[in-house]
Image 1 (spheres, rainbow, N blue to C red):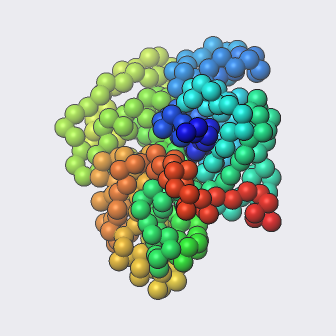
Image 2: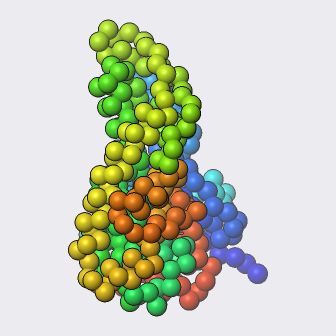
Image 3: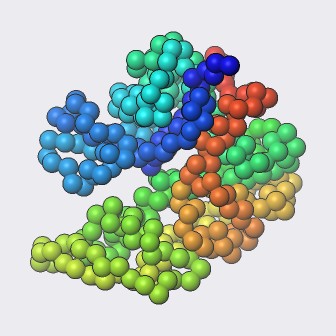
Length: 337
């Protein structure tokens, strides 16, 4: 039996996740592209990330996806074409591509997903769009046809999406500008202010990943190198788990208070269902140990942590691709008119 070239693509702010039906393979690569002299592509994905903060002046490392939306059509087109070929060398003619997309996009933003495929070397592609909360719900096993009220909290790289689903539709969806990158920047800012130590966001990201624990700070520390902001000279410092955990917890508490306010504004009967079921937590930043219990304590609601983390959305696309009855959630621009 000939299996069509069908792909599920989640263009995230931090990483691009792609599922290939023919290969039955899921791949995740950094949302980055390296351009020499503004036009020549020399690296994409993880290869471009390895050059980040170490690139020469004539090489620019760019993130063409911002807040989960396409910021530069040309750069995303070049990056996606190369990443699809890494997933499956033979993309073939008439590929079918399912994109996960943010809720409440404008017509121009929706057309960008078509542009990155039609402008590429793909021959007669078929493009379908699926709202991200729907993808997450399918991956989480939420029964969309029966739920009276389910809430998904997706903490990504640059933002946190709060979505409530009821009666087979997205009732309300909101976004706040708090995510993994903001946590990295908070670590950089705190070390600069309290220890006169200037470090890059890449170093901050490593400290966050290794040292953060919101249940109980680890009894360990890491040596880092940066620049002394007073002298301008290289400086070495030892950063403890307690310090990094305290910085991250401070930002998570602010986020939890916003989520609590959001939950209080939804209809009472839906809110009751959400509280009985618990909030579903997903996204790459959900990997922080203890973040679910920290959120639960402040919001006052059970948190159901997804084990798929940043792969949750593309796993939902995989479900749609594999199960014909779920394809009713996919649409085209014409369908929405």
